[in-house]
Amino acid sequence: MPRAQNNGYSHLLFGHTYTEKADPAQFERHCHANYEMLYVLRGNGKYVVEGAEYPLKPHTLILIRPYEFHYVCPDKNCTYERYVINFDGNILIGAAAELSILQNDTQKKHGVYFSEEHLTAQIRAEFYGMDEARKLFAEKANRAAMEETMIRTALTRVLLLLSLADRTEGAEYEENVITRVTEYLDLHLTDNFSLDKIAQLFFVSKYYLCHAFREQNGTSIFAYLTVKRIAMAQRLLLSGEPATSVAYQVGFRNYSSFYRAYCKQTGKAPAHRRETNA
Image 1 (tube, helix red, strand yellow):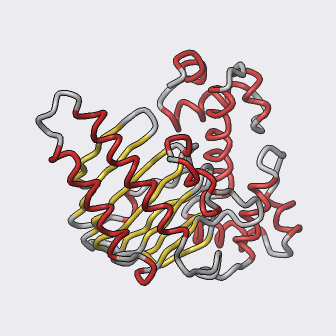
Image 2: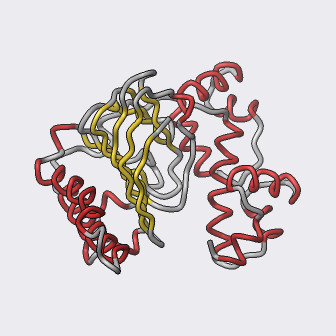
């Protein structure tokens, strides 16, 4: 089972997690409204973001942008150690918030991947510094605020340094029919779909479509759509939209099916998120 040390703040979560014997089935397929940065210290396998695959190796890093469907698939029984940061873009300092690597390109939502050669000693040192922050301020009365400030500052520096890396956006994955299907679904998220219609659009059989999509994304087409729609619903609820209206806006045909899916994915009723803003 994973062993983690996490420090959570209102818009920032930093964790150093170690799994002695990884089981790929334990790693959730999901998306969320915040950014996620994953830096691997030990382990092998693959990252999957919106159907695009990248090699998961020691000293590789991937940046997931808001609402990008993703998961990791470490090799079975490998030792998997990583730093994970979830953050809201509003916490970044100055010009870092406007970096191109943070922008969701509607045509290519496949995360931003950095191989070992891109991660300089300076970038690695910033992660180690974040990990040491909890020890440095362990005895301080206002420990949480101090840790948050240090991690927020280090994260800003990491993003600035990554933006200088000599890399070609999107060059690390090979586009295929399933990445194109995934992009299409994301651009038409609230539409009514049938598997027959999607198969016809991309000139493949329905059997191939279902099998290949699950193989590449780790889930079915309709499970993928549900995860994305619920993530969209969370954002609308936070803006104050009533739950009954949100259900139809995000593509559900009735409120009861939306309610069940929302509770299953978030562990809360839709109205709870709107009322508590949590």
